[in-house]
Length: 552
Ligand code: G3I
Image (cartoon, rainbow, N blue to C red; front, side, top):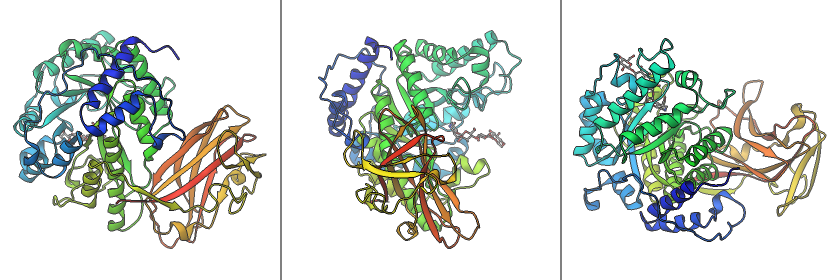
């Protein structure tokens, strides 16, 4: 790994210092982060007490374009709780709803202090015809926010979706570059001094491609340098506005967040002006990032000197069966988890929900109706509203007792099996306690380390936290999965993926995820399986936990 550049180091401590002064909670967290001591949630041991070298920050872009002119005592609900926490609480806003639905505007003004145009600021919406711009919808949102003393985040200057039809493959690279630069210049100039931050580039990473970049018109015609060029052009147009990169699916640790982290680090080391990153957080109650994953990601991006936003949070509930009351309670826990993680991490400056009433969610537009937000279709607050409110107080969901039998293998193989391989329990290498190792694996069905008989322990449905620590022997790296098999009326059990991680033979890594269970009729058996590595690779497992998540 290349040595850290001085500009990156200055950004890191400058950003930590700026955030440390933002609130007492942040001050404690920032000092610990600056000392390199990770919080207990993300590691097994304490951090090293590295000396804190707090340097004066380079001039940072202006952070408070619209200072909080509304006194805290005049605030209510989420907006008051966020101010007390020193965090931003935002919502994506649809211009037609703001125009046609008076209640929409009332709730938006009452509950949120940070506004993101959901679609109005996208290139296709602003410039449907070449050379012509239609600013009305975006102006209506910016004007509304300014009247309500709300801050504004523009979304998004460059995205391969919702492009104007005239931006197409017939363009030469030079024509596309010129069009991009003009779009950035026109848009940022119009709102200079009124918009606090802009998503400059959205969703440029796709680790399913060979390059790791999204196969978009921008990547095809301009190469990955379009990302750097866009940020430099934006900074040249507006020296003060905060410039963000925004990405989907990087809340949990894994290949996509790793690639994005490396990309951000390399761009920052080259002095590319990026001030923040958005972790979109479109999740579902049936499976979402564990607290340890989300906080570890917030922390590592913050340690690059980036401001972290949870930028598009919504929580689907209909991807798992279950009655509305249980689904909405699980949703409440998920929102509390996501918001709480942002509040307790000094590197996270706020949470934006991707809408706030189920009457206006993008998810219904793409054909798979759901109820992912915190108000129902009549603007009645759902349990999820309380989840956000409690999360803003910094209170995270609590973990119950371990529902897995002999999860620490203190009773050797009791309650565990690996029918198609050889199972042995011994003192764990390089960690306290015992570990179960599965060897002579053939890569077939029976290879998993399994525990059956969980139906009585998990029949309440969740939400649950899953965690285990895994290590390999006989291969430098391979994927390890945790899966629940639910035996219901259907002949074949239903497989629910709980978590996936890249494991190595160099040390223990955590396999973690939160999940909810819905049952399609009577469930007669539930089995937990840890599996994945190729045949011949030995899989060692320690400290397996499944714990109920409760919202205090
Ligand atoms: O503006 C047209 C309107 O004229 C037409 O009558 C109507 C019916 O076809 O369509 C309208 O355009 C729709 C647009 O939203 C504005 O409402 C598009 O069809 C629709 O596809 C588009 O969906 C947006 C989606 O991005 C596009 O991929 C969603 O509202 C928006 O919430 C969603 O947001 C994205 C973020 O920007 C980036 N992260 C992922 C997130 C979810 O996809």
